[in-house]
Length: 161
Image 1 (cartoon, rainbow, N blue to C red):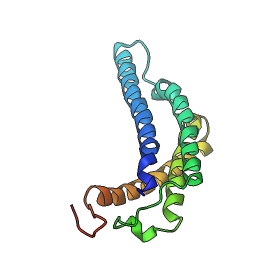
Image 2 (image 1 turned 45 degrees about the vertical axis):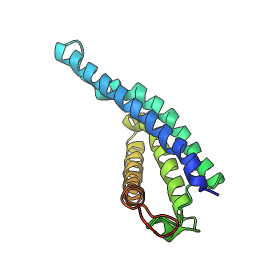
Image 3 (image 1 turned 60 degrees about the vertical axis):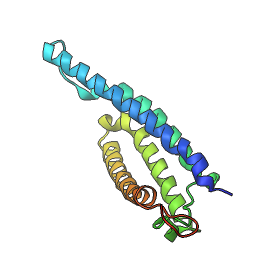
Image 4 (image 1 turned 120 degrees about the vertical axis):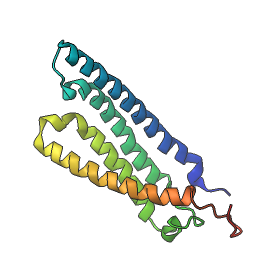
């Protein structure tokens, strides 16, 4: 039986990346357009007003990230394969699934808070700390995943590709 992780991880990693990638692209176009209007003297450059509608869309996507995190724990996703060099240290424990669930839920909550950051200093502080912490954990996970998936290809028989 193949690993369950790989058959469903594509949607949990691919869909949010595509969604927020498209939002980032649209945000870039909106910023360029706002700068062009500011250069012509039509209106002053206000990045908060320019990007705020996109932040509401990002917040809706944040609810999806929270649901991905909850569903991942419920359905037993994100279990590390025993063949990976770093992740196998956590095989059989709940450390990695809980970490990934926290990453999705934390990123989702950060996205949900994003439209309200300009209105409240407390929300801004909470969102900044949460976003920074989750970002650092994503970077840590990406280093281990890079090493395990790109730089190291062990086979079940103990050989390497």
